[in-house]
Length: 202
Picture 1 (cartoon, rainbow, N blue to C red):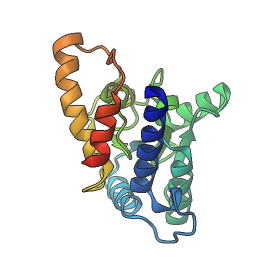
Picture 2: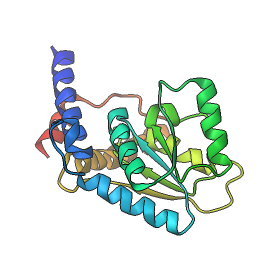
Picture 3: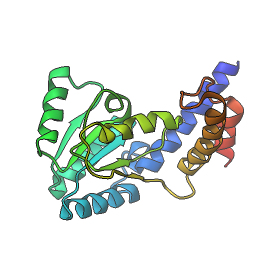
């Protein structure tokens, strides 16, 4: 019963998180750009003008597809990889980006979070917060590898008053717990149903 309850709450939270990313993810008939996407486009254009390059992470590949559409329409060049990208295609995309091809590297959080060296970027943009801040940190570290000569700036695009703010507050509480008990290791306990329901209640 506990697992079933947890599953249903998580499903509802995921729907809310997807809506915060872009309304089209929960209402396909929605035609407007979405506030977060507009903010991302503004930010990327500004970075381009100032000769910066960025890694852009999301957990949702269908959201990344919407971002790709917008980049194509606005002349933003990019490399891309997600969990379905072949090893060879990954290697090519990483090499191309490191050699200067692409204003942005779009990555799904889990696929792009480990094992990549992407020091050609000096900005990291997280489009949606993940439950476990350690996963986000691993992704951010792609730009912090050996060979990085510039400071790396990290942005998190968060919709005010949304589930995303609740997740960030959970990060704070969990981070204190993790730091005191486990040091830098990942959380040993999954988020409880009570914590999940708390997110829904705000």
